[in-house]
Amino acid sequence: MSEWLESAITRARGINDWLAPKRAHALELLSTTKWPTRKTEAWRYTPLRSVERSTAKVIKDVVALSPVDIAGLSAIELVFVNGKFDASQLTKILPEGLSISLGQTLENAQQAQALNAFSTIKPERHLFGLVNDALAQDVVVVSVAEGVEIAQPIRISSLLSHGAESHTRVQVSLAAGSRLAVIEDVQASGDSLNTAFVEYDVASNAYLEHYRFALQTGTNVAIGGSHFNLHDHAKMHSTIVGFGSDLSRLDTDIIHAGQFADAKLNAMYLLDGKELFDLHATVEHAMPNGTTEENVRCIVADRARAVFNGRIHIHRDAQKTLAELNNRNLLMSNTAEINTKPELEIYADDVKCAHGATVAQIDKQALYYLQTRGVSRSKAQVMLNFGFINELIDLMPNAALAEWIRPIIRERFSQMEVK
Image 1 (cartoon, rainbow, N blue to C red):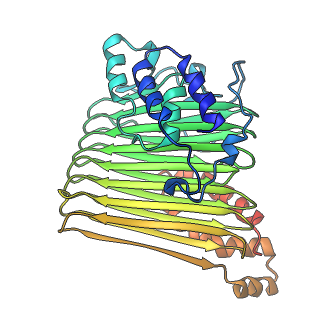
Image 2 (tube, helix red, strand yellow; image 1 turned 90 degrees about the horizontal axis):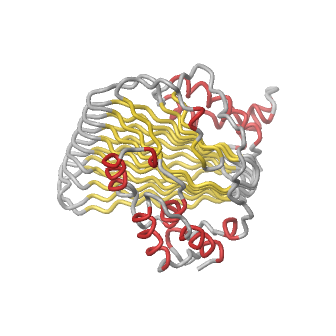
């Protein structure tokens, strides 16, 4: 066990609140969990040196931070500042049928319900998910009533100042026939460390539109997860956009717990310098007639390293499943590295499933051709690369978010040189 993990366990043991039963269970599991090494399959290509040498600390002083403005987006702001929920930035009057509460403020019956639901969707195999279980100061509970459609998206922003450590947790529950859009966003100043986990329970015939923007770069360490439980005829559409940092790791789990559930996951990440981004996505088809469509695209420049592990598990009773996983990767230098591992594990005999991965290099002749026609090198790179990603941006249901992220990605491309 590392010194960092020992310190985290010691700190967690000093916390006593309404989450104590769940925290005790997490601590019990952590006490017997080995610190991952390069021989640990789930962390084979993602060393944890950045975590072990991190000097980030919990900042108790009040710091005034606000989320970056997104033009054209009217959202219900749910803001954490250095790990603490900032109730002052929450919309004062919520739409009818929507409830957002801090766990410690709930009435006894509601608190007991939230406690029972806590960490039931996120699998126990996630080491830093257990760390988050143990160190989260509280849980923000979001509920949508049956049959209610919330027009405005909820934006969950985790804001960190320089050198801050934070562990944030949110539970989102969509009742039968409801609709909701949720945006997860981490904004960090530097030398920070955060774990940010959100669990989603999507009831029968409900629809969830989900986004996660992991755009922290530099010396930040960001480890988190988005975990989904889909009931009968539930639908979800998720988009992930990530940049690399000293260590960026995201775990996504989708559980088809009901029949005719439908899941779409599109992910794109762009890395430069010595950055690292690791995406682990697991889909569990536990019931019949489910569908999953997963598209992951990655562009890596300089000496950056990308990791993708995509696993689709078709259980024995999950007949009539339709599942497809497609991972496409583009290298912009001879020293960039991509480690991809798409997996299909099938135990049912009446399914249609496919998976595949490709790794290619940018066409230097095409780059040279554009430069000879008077196009600058940086603009030529954007022209050649943007189409690779833009297809997934076009699939984003929220037009305001698509228009916001496009220039950010163009700027990112202009900084990534072909070598």
